[in-house]
Image 1 (cartoon, rainbow, N blue to C red):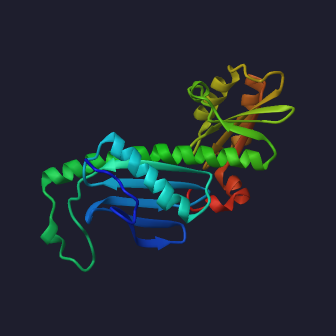
Image 2: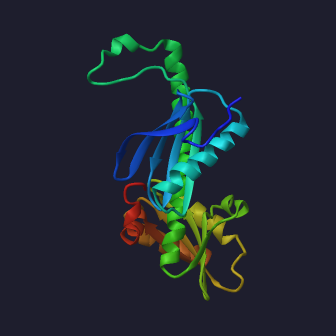
Length: 249
């Protein structure tokens, strides 16, 4: 059973390297490598915790608490932090100066590694989606709206962020990559059926990396069909207002 003490006693965080927007730390417990943490900095700090030894849920809560109090909170002010935690097996080390044949993984190792990578990618996409929503919420706030992340009920109806002022209620869906005509139609259809306006003018906003070249014609047809204003917002537009997120979105 692990009993996490203050870092100066049994638990240490040893920084391996850093860049202007990220750091990698080794987690050391009683002289043994427990795992590593990768941190990426914006106003919202994103982290991957990779553990090589099994620990209990209680120990995990203690570890996250120490990561927050002794590491994250000492680095910089932040609005939020998002951690993904993985239980992993190290199957090799790779370097331009090391003979890789000395550490060749077995077929079983590669299969297990592939499963782990898929899980990590899935969790990474989830965390990245949360970060995108956080940035969009901040973007609308900078434009003068009161903005919040949508409830789970609204999230199921393709709404990620709600922003409003005295006259307008904006229901926003945040997408990765390019949004085509069909996706825009499906988003508008779902949001048009939501009765949450409370007498305010409802607007459908779609945030994406790119839109079709005919996006204005598409929006004109959707606005006529559903009777609501449609905004298409490029992530590049958001980054012009919030350049601190340029390396993370």
